[in-house]
Image: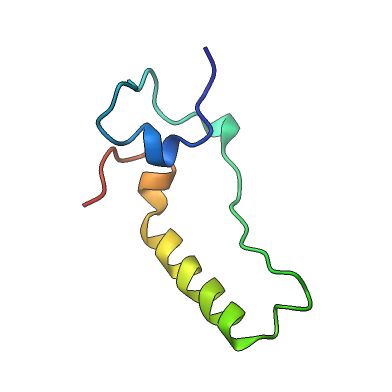
Length: 71
């Protein structure tokens, strides 16, 4: 048995998987959004990074396993 790395998607939805434990703080870490330096100045890349950053912040508790279902 091992922690499921993709817990945000699979362990929070009804399926054949069952949560055995709560979040494990030692396995936590930062999530980085990266772009190749040559692409970073492009407007569409900046727009995507901004959009995804806000979207991920809005789902932070679910992604960290603190809540089981999205509202």
